[in-house]
Amino acid sequence: MDRRQLFAMMKAYHRTSLLRAAVDLDVFTHLADGPAAPGEVAVRVGADARGTRILLNALAAVRLAETDGTRFWLTEAHADLLVPGRPGYAAGMVHVFAGDREWEAHRRIAEAVRHGGSVLAENAETAGYAFWEDFARHADVVAEPTAELLADTLKPWATDRAELDVLDVACGHGIYGYTAAKRYPQARVWSLDWANVLDEAHKHAVRLGVADRVERIAGDMFDTPLGGPYDLVLVTNVLHHFSAERAAELLARAASVLKPDGRLGIVGFTTSGRTPAQDPAPYLFDLLMLAWTAQGEVHSEQTYERLLAEAGLRIIANEPVDRPGIDFHVLLAGRAA
Image: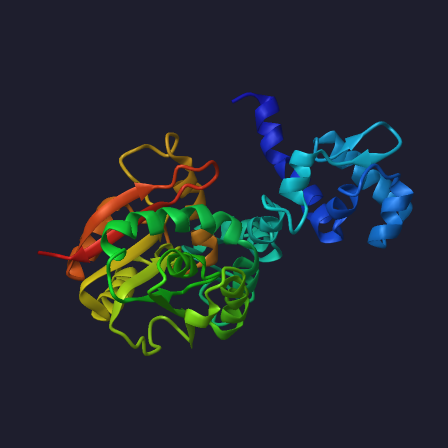
């Protein structure tokens, strides 16, 4: 690393702040209408003309907008990424990756290191934490490719089943369960999460056309009655919030409501035999878990094998998600022989 790279790392938040401001002001929607002068954009977004001009020039500087020196606009490719409602829209994830709550957690990492866990008054484990509403609202764009892979992995087992009752634990946006329901018409989904999160997840169920086959279970995944038994239990993007011991409790609960020939699906980061430099994503994510939970961290593939064995299960499939920017693994487990 040289000085320029080091300074670029220090200043990375400048671009993040710029993108977040443009999304908050809905600037990209108005730039997609065609070339416009800063004053016109300012009127449309209800902002100061000078402030809007400075923002637009900054967007052009990082190639998030085009300009001829007088007017500003988006290319079609950028519009697809940045404008709500477009098929490729992804900019809403700024509310997840760079929302106030994640920023505050990262700001206090040094304190978390000293303390050995989160020092925040509210964190990822707080009941009804409002961040999970933003996650449920916006993170479908990241979840959908992984959910499709999960549905593909289930195909040999799920296709000919007369029933496919699915419990989605800590469902968040619900995309994993709803994608299974869309793919397999015999599927019914029970979505478990906090009530405020389930309201957001329901919008995705409606959008995917499966809301008539979805039931809600509001509450804490560790003590709310789960019902069942189920053909498929999904535990996605949540086990890294806990120590291995606490994760084992959740997996034991999941296994207890699984039918004898059922499957348990896990989605999330894992660590393997590669070094942090070779596989940086899970190790960087661990920093957020340190700052945002009491004892959470990314677990290794070997740890998952052990935890599943303790729950009477074995790994049947382990599939990495082969999409840029998505570093998850899909694990599928069934009863041990």
